[in-house]
Amino acid sequence: MALNKVEICGVNTSKLPVLTAEEKDFLFERIKAGDEKARELYIKGNLRLVLSVIKRFSGSSENADDLFQIGCIGLMKAVDNFDTGLQVKFSTYAVPMIIGEIRRYLRDNNSIRVSRSLRDTAYKAIYAKENYTRVHLKEPTIEEIATEIGISKEEITYAMDAIQSPVSLYDPVYTEGGDTLYVMDQISDRKNREENWVESISLAEAMKRLDDRERHIIELRFYEGKTQMEVACEIGISQAQVSRLEKNALKSMKNYLRT
Image 1 (spheres, helix red, strand yellow):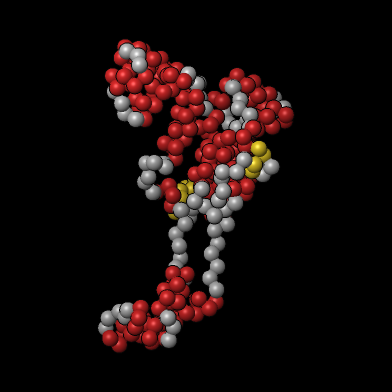
Image 2: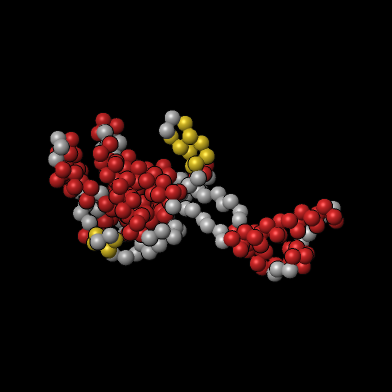
């Protein structure tokens, strides 16, 4: 899936608008009053969320335009159902909605068809294996099965793999009260765990609110793990200045994340 192109579904992603907090609040008030134009502007102002989400599915063979359209459906659902009384940022609420919409699309379009000839080869191999095991009281090797049915071991291996029932990451494993748990939800991966991933988006947005020097200090301290003294030496100021700038930056980020 190509995600590096500038235009997706006719949308120039390099020129997507970015709404300020004040604009978001104003537009959402208009949306609650039934203003369709405000809803359209709010959706356009949050399309970057959809782009961020579909990058998570870069390993998928699906077309980027298709995933973008499906993600936009999730975004629109988030806009229509968002409750400002939840005391959470819209992005925190919208990202799981967008992910869920894409997951459902991938799950519903993940059918795998196996040709009749492959199935026949696989069934012959299975029969030969069972017969050999019954006679010799041990399982045969692929070479022995190939000799028995007169088909190359490569073809047998390919056929046996083809009829396996693959477990998709999007397969449902448990449902209760309308909430479905998927295979993906049971896999532990701290780098891609959804709540951490959503949080990283919010942190990245908070970092953008810092000036260049504050952002550089935070990156050196918390992303590269350097001490305040090492940071001070690298950028040419005192450790006390680093400490003060760091505290101001963290306070600014904390205030943003709370709004």
